[in-house]
Amino acid sequence: MSTPNNNPKGILLILSGMALFSIQDSLIKYIFEESALYELYFGRTLTALILLFIFLKVKSEKLVFKTYYPLLTCCRVICFFFGFSFFYISLTYMSLAMANALFFSSPFFISILAIIFLGEKVGIRRWLAIIVGFIGVYIVLNPDFENFNYMNLAPVACALCYAISMTITKITSVKDNVYSQMFHLYIGAIGISILFFIFTGKGQFNTFSDPTFQFILREWFTNPTYAWPYIVAMGFVAAISFYCVFSAYSVASPSVVSLFEYSLIIWAIIIGYVLFNDVPTIRTFVGVALIIGAGVYIYLREKVKDQMIVTDTPNR
Image 1 (cartoon, helix red, strand yellow):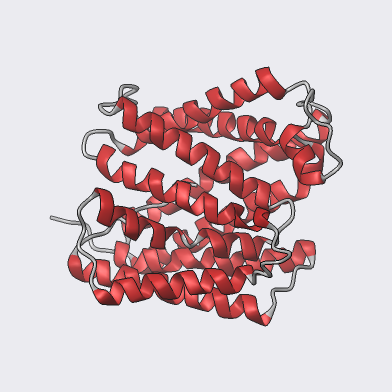
Image 2: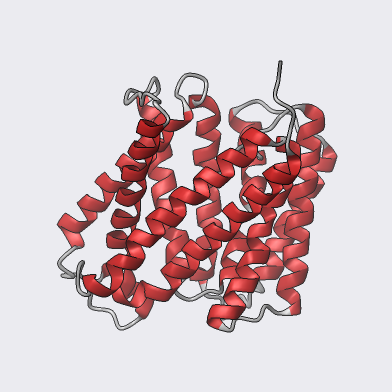
């Protein structure tokens, strides 16, 4: 007998998870001038990995280290790692609201990739929704092509990498369970971060005055007593966020929970205003409305067609 859905609890959990994701982003934005990108990535992921082991121990769950899809898993890990590298970089010069709004172009990329690699059938209405979604992205970017800063495309690059990673996840989930896939993401991120430490961790390439490039290439551990409490806190926040999201999907109907993932943009607007005095423009609000509207429509069409790749549980 199946457990009845507890939608109010699921909504509360997904709202909490999205709020915590936004808090994690704000911590990155707050300390990026005192840490290096891959130092931050390393510390956050190591903390989350330790918490994953503790969680599995408490739950008496066995972690399967092996993957049945080694090549696809490597591709998924690399796409995810560099995708969120782009996102973290964007937080150094972009508001939380704008970065997260552009990240939510990922469902449009996922729909296109699902057509190419998974053989999904997409009708004219979903194609129109994808086009409307990208129009929303264009409005948020507000490009002046003569003076356009191509760094503003970093969250869109993240969305594309995330879409590739989630498309691969749809395939690897057939045999690899969710905890194994999280472990592969974490251990891969730690390994790649260590490689960056070996080749750039002494700050030998940090010859830039721009704060964003300094964040990417800064020497590791320049201010550990200040930065690392925040980095460890990010790991805890990320772990609790994952728990809230997975719990939301386990206790409530996915068709209800998925729609509230877009609350992340609302949380980003609120936290960005409170902590960084970021006030989105009317143009940004219009673009966000188109992105959310298109994303929700794509979800509803997938529900009708029973093709749920776009709304699978997120992994940030």
